[in-house]
Image (cartoon, rainbow, N blue to C red):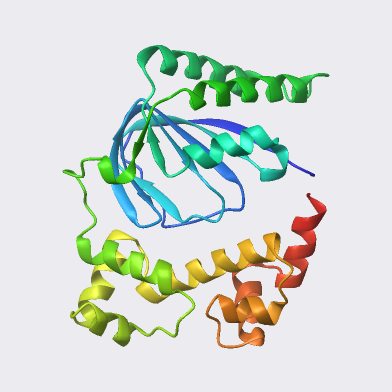
Length: 265
């Protein structure tokens, strides 16, 4: 499949949490239509209430937790987008979008129409493309809020974890150990391990590995760097170790991953 646009709805009548952090190589438009969620994005955690839209750019780790809710999701590959659509998504990413009642109603109608479009009909792709284009037109008119301007009164992730995540996001290419990370933040290894497991559902070194793999996938797709160069720039000890871990986690070698992604462009 050369490019894709997928739309789905989800309704949860009981509290539901993701299994943990994840990232992907496409844009995700998350439209919360009912309920409240705790959303962790890169190195910021915040509380959102419906109606609310968050746009997750490619290769960005995130997760969501909370009580009952309803949401609609659009997954769209970068090569599906025209230049204007790329600009809108880039500008609206890392923002909290709070549509007015009128905008929310219009977006809910557009999302529902996309969900209900028969993908096997003769002009399905054209219909979906038109609806998606107008959806971005509406989203582009929504006033945005920077992450830093949002109140985090209900934040559940402690400052230690957020600071450690921010530190690793910046220094992922450096040589890190659990002991070194604990010393950097003047806490015990047990303390930082406990907090990562409790709030991010993974140990700190697992988070670092996910981050490095996400950065590596981004470089494999968007640069012509060699496997050796990518392994070094993303903090892996050797190209062989990078290839071993990548294949173990992604079920494909870095070289074949790059070839596969390039065939989609």
